[in-house]
Amino acid sequence: SDINKPLKVIEHVPAGQMPKKEIGEGECSKVMTGAPVPKGADMVLMVEDCEELGDDQIRYVGQSKSGNICFLAEDIAKDDVVLPANTLIKSQHIAVMAAVGATKVKVYQKVKAAILSTGDELVEPQVKPGPSQIRNSNSWQLLTQVKRAGADAEYMGIVLDTMEDTREKLSKALENSDIVFLSGGVSSGDYDYVPVIMKELGLEILFDSIAVQPGRPTTLAAGNGKFVFGLPGNPVSSFVQFELLGKMLIASMNNIEMPDRIVKCMLGADITRKKAKRKSFYPVKLNEKGEIVPIEYHGSAHINSLNDAEGAIAMDIGVMEIKKGTLTDVRFF
Image (cartoon, rainbow, N blue to C red; front, side, top):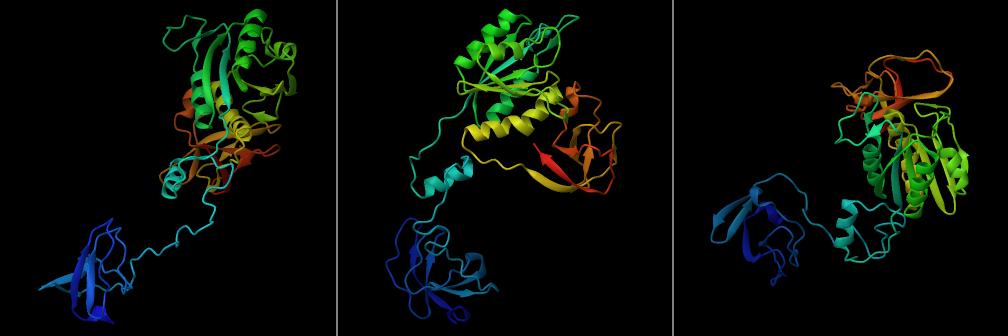
């Protein structure tokens, strides 16, 4: 092979330029990364594996026999489908489109979502709450979740606990969106008017309770080509049920297939519970050993438990305990 003998350098080829000389026996060309390979060449030697002998001669002193050549169509061939229909476009897809010259592609119009929170006890984050008030955290959590799920989202304020305000703000939210995400107002309290108003506005309630903890009063209504997705007022319930159901609904409306991010992981601590009538989800994180461990969590109102949450594990109906060392499904957020 020529690489076992000194080689004469006959040409320098910068990136972006075509070679002008064909390589013969005992010859080579110095090419920059990204430059075309000259005719007659069948491999590229890395410069750090070559010794300069003077008089435009080099000798190969490396061990690798790799060709270091990207061949035409080895990555993408003519008529290959590089992005199938209904792909959620991410940064890596943009690079592929740019590489093949696809500067204009047909896309679906993004789902438009409106965000509302209900409750006289709520004030906005910049307001100091009174003794009977709390700051509205759910709306801003939802706003971020909805945007991450691929929808355009608009926050439309706090709904007071009156029939009139519920009717006015829900009606306006429906006018300007494809789907409304509501936090609170869907349970069976004296001031939870949302189900009544949804029916007034021509929406059919598809379900208003699920056998899941946290998030039992999760509600979905549809009508006139629109959806209302009602989430519980407790922040952990709202977060978990959006991750389980809400983002899948947005994906479906966007004509996107979004598989669950579920990975088998080793449980690093026992998880037990006292009741097993509902399927339960527990926020978890990875420890330094790469095991999944539960986050200290005392109820769906404890928003701080989500700070370290990287995912959730499920405990099915009838299951009271999952033992340490069990391989279990983790749904990563």
